[in-house]
Length: 448
Image 1: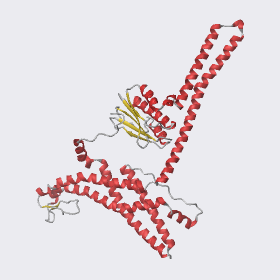
Image 2: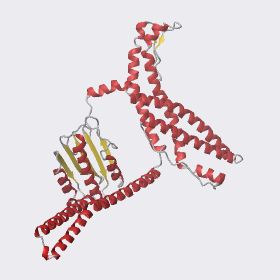
Image 3: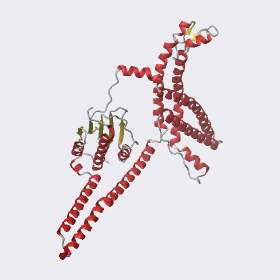
Image 4: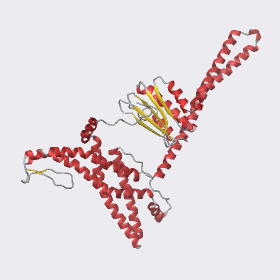
């Protein structure tokens, strides 16, 4: 696979046909149908109750005489919308795997009084956004229940021959073969042979149903992301708070590592060097018992400790900022990939040099990911690509032909890399199916 290529290959006609035929048996399709059924019922109920509460609340507010009652009803409607949004977020996480962070709950000072608390809740932007979701969910619930109807009708039509064998013609009117289309009517089978038509009708309906439910679920996902989560500003503040905490933790960890390495490494060597030189000094002071061989051994030991201390200090400095980066990211990546024990195809097209902090993160990400390739993937070859995108973003792609299965939180160091990338508003994407290949994409801004 070329280093700069990340687009998956187009599915073959055979693979596409297999996917269509297997869709009704896919667990995802049944989960989406269950989600649409449950949220369709709760969405209709919640929307009707919310409309009643808001209509009564606005009506009382406009009448002036019942303004307080109207405000209370409006606040109750906001609470209902929040509860509805909370329920749908949980159902989406359980059935769709869509995890949407909850917006912050409205909170007012304890001494604000009744009107202060009412005013605070009425000004709650996230509450009104969830009201918007519940109201927008009303027509979507109807479409979702209609999509679920395709599953039910398909299964009913498949049982037409069985129902004929068990119940015959019922009241003499035959067996109804249902169609999910809103117009066109439904045929009636008056013989066992006629009921066999229900099998292809049911199969066609069940083949279409998963894609219908998936389309409706996709619209609902986007609606939830837009209205049920925290707003863009609140989410940005939350991300900044989290990345600031990650940056502080990363700095503290780095300082602790430097202190530990200095204490356990170079400091021990320098202490041994000082003791050795003291012993040499003592030997040279007493000329009557001077043993040149012993002095020579002490000097050799001191020289060895000085050399080791210099090596450890050099490695420590390289771990903080690799000197090879002074000549640019391209040269640093060439040096890094040349040292790898597996063949690495390198592609570099960096039109504008990023800031030193971004270069450092890119270098360490590449080094860590190549280490993962060597230790965990069982790959015979790897690819590394560093390209500047049209928007100025630096995109790193590290791929291999190993056995795949890489994911964050499995001891591969990917969680730490993700945290480091997020401190500069970067992203890390992992595509590593079982059996491989693996492609990890890191996008970094040009400036930290």
